[in-house]
Length: 302
Image (cartoon, rainbow, N blue to C red; front, side):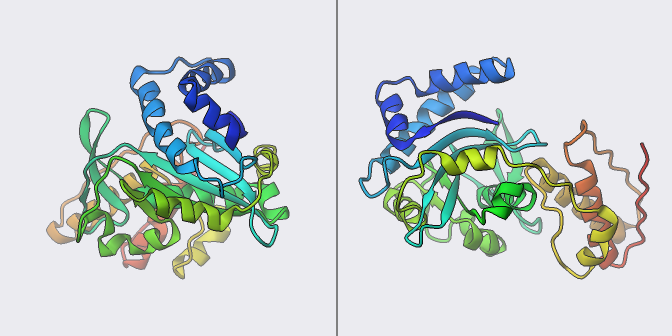
């Protein structure tokens, strides 16, 4: 489901008229019957002003499609910003941009793809923004029939518009290199680099045609957990974890290592409603802990 959609020129006009956050707020209520928190409203106003600055480039086509707060089907996850269009070979492309207002982060040693930052009124472990953007792109690519049939290419990146990057920055630690290569992270002062990233993917507009193809695409059935285990044990990625799924996974891996070291038993209860990804976490843990020669069983019941 798309909360806000239009073309680039529509978006620029809405930001210039200071109505973009109101339009999103109204659409969320009309489509989801959900009231918007004040901090979320302010976040839209702030982050979308920066995206306005990025898109005021005549080489980014005025007819390029724009979607804001796109809800990934079968999940509670929403993509902050999407731009669609065609490249110089006239191939359909989409650029996913995860917007972050963070001003500082700390790297988390030994836990893949996790960082620490102040969010939600507390210092928390969260996924690296490049991992987040990449994992969202993979979800759409793996499970959207239109993307597969129409060969729509999905590119992703993160934009930390308040974050001042420094030499030897924690954002660029070696443990995040793989995700940064797949999904670069742009920071304060890097508007030209982000523009070039977009322009390399989108040279002509599509009038939101590609976004609508994705939004109307059928969700293909998830891959069989049983058939995926053998592939995962060989090191292949089958079920991509997003956001809290990845945080929980890394926490459990760390605890399992601690149990192996001090020979104490520990219990972890993962709670979540239907579709939150408990089985995704479990099957990834089964594969990884088995690779580490730990005894694991997976019992599924309804």
